[in-house]
Image 1 (cartoon, rainbow over the protein chains, first blue to last red):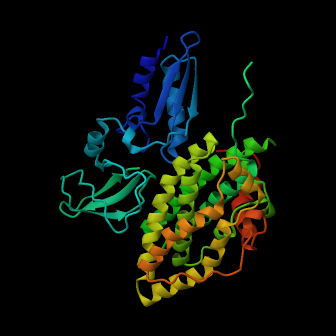
Image 2: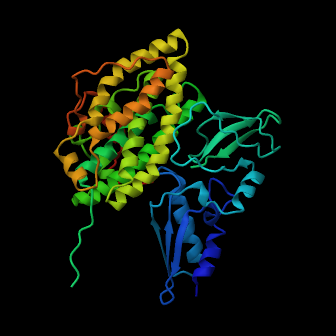
Image 3: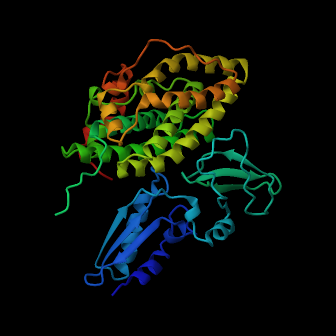
Length: 163
Length: 256
């Protein structure tokens, strides 16, 4: 029978479809998992990253499929909005995995800070480590990323936006 | 026996006003998909649209539950006629040129930042949950559009002329954002909603420095009041809905 600890392990192998080096657990969107010891039914609470993130439904399906395959009798995936997801919830090893994949990880978020205009955030290049980087596009291929380039190694890269 | 406690809940009418603002602005911005002036701004406007439509979906789903007439977010988005929409007129106006697109996002998202900050403290836990999520998105939208307002306002003669024209066109419609009626007053009194008029001084404190940096004048107040939030819309909303609702109405219940 599936137990809570095993369920967490199973979910730690379910990868985010847009950032396929991080699991949904490492991404910090799985808030709670409980498996009913009597019935084997699993209840998973997920907090979405962005309101309109198109991957949300794909992730819920992947969670459901993985837990059913691991022996859950049924799976309920519920959405919890509060507290809102933040990049602070990324697992400790997530930054290094992102960097190795070519995505600059989010730095500390500036929560509640006033909008500072024309002060560029400069994530270091994930390929060569240079801080000589510039923003190409504030919005990227997914809601959670922006596009940058390194002016030293000349490579473009994505930056996981801190929120 | 335990006392019966009622959970504070924002009413369906107020939720429709919030949800329709997000939905209609999202729909307008999505018109730029494949038509942005440069690739980066094509992606930006459609990403902002995606955030807004995501917010609208949460708000309209909640409105449907609270209303108790069996309408879900799709029924509310696709099966209402113009007179039943409750968005401010500002968001339904045609896009116009890129200056007008970015100025509208700036004026509206600056308002939404304040609205979501205030609603983060709502007694209604569902609304507060949507608000704390949405405020982060709105801040990013305000930052991006605000930089364009500065860049175009303090840019070339041509870009400045366009931004001045956009400001003339849009500014009178911002007054509606801060008009309260009995629905708003009741929600604010219950601690679930906000007195919109109370946000106006802070909104001006946030918007005016950006206009100043853009070397744009703050337009004078006029007595004009649009009334989209109360169901009195411009001619433009019907045309927008015709495009937005056509597919759903031609194929009711279709899914993919």
